Image (tube, rainbow, N blue to C red; front, side, top):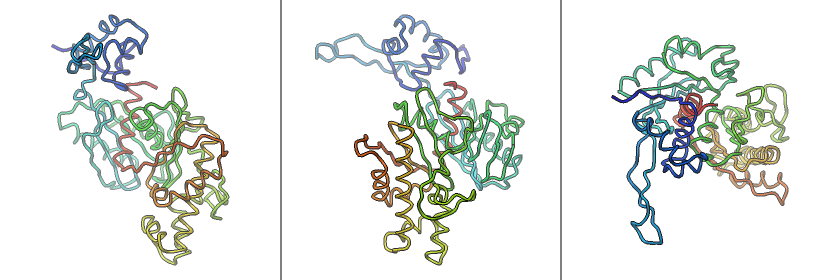
Length: 382
C-alpha cells in the first residue's frame, strides 16, 4: 500500500520536488547538479517520493554520445504525477465568482462561473463553499484553495479594503475556514497574477520583472530576486496615483493628471461621455477611435500616458521585463504606436529598450492566479 505523502515536504525532499515542479522533467544527474548533491543522494531522496506516487519516471531518453544515436547511458527523467493533487482558484468580481481547478503546475483542467446573489461576505463565502463541493464531487483530491479579489489583503486572510465590493476589515479567510476543511489563502488579485507569471508563466525564468494591469483600476507588482516586493502595504497599488500630467482629469483623491484619472476605464468613459455626448463601452470607444477624431484623441492620449507610466516603471524599478495586462489592455493593442512613443520619449535614448509583453487575460486566468497563490503558499513556500 502506498504511503499517503502530501506536500509540503521538508528538507531535500522538498527541494527535489520543487525543482521538478518548476523545471521538470529532470534526470537525477540534472537534479544533482542543480542542488549541489551527488546523484546517489538524489536517488535516495527520490525513492520514497516515487513509492508514494508523488514523482514518476518518464520514458527513457537515450543520450547520444560521439554523435552516434543510441549510445550513452539512459536517463530516466523524474516528473510530478499531475493526476494526484489539485488546487482551486477563485477570482471574485463585483458580480461573479470565477473558479478553476488546476494541476500542481497551475494547468487549468476545469473552469466554472457563478453569478453572485449578494456581495455580503458571508453569502459570497457560502457560494464559494458550494462551488468547492461541486468540484470535489468529480473525484479529484483538492488540496488547497486560493481566493483573489481587488483589495488590500493582510496575513493571507483579512480584507482591509475592497472598494469594488464595499468590504472593509473583513476576515474573509476565517469565513471560508468555517465552511471548508481545506488550507485557504486570500490574496490581492494583481499579486496573484504576478505569482502565476513568476512560477508558471511568461516570467518563469526571469528573476526581475514588473506586471502592470489596467482596467477598473491600475495594478502593479514587482518581483526582484527571491520574491514579490510587497512592501508595507501589500495589495495597495503604488502607481495608481503616479503623476502623468496628461488628460486634465481629476481622480477621487483630488489629483490632476494622475494614472487613475487618465487610464482607468471609468476615467476614459467619463471623457468620452463629454466629448461624444453619448454613453459608450470601452470596446466601443476603441472602435470609434479609428474614425472619430474626438474618440481618437481620448484613446491616443491615454495610450501615450500608459507608455509614460511603463517608462517610469522601467526607469525606477529597472526590471528586465514588463508584462502589461488587465481588462483594459485593448487600449495598448489598439494604439500601440502612441504607447511606444510614450515609452521612447520618457527613456534615456541610450537605455536598453523595454522588454514589454502585452497579454490579454480572461477571468479564468485571474482565477488561475489565485490557484498559483495556493500552490506557492502551501507547496513552494513563501
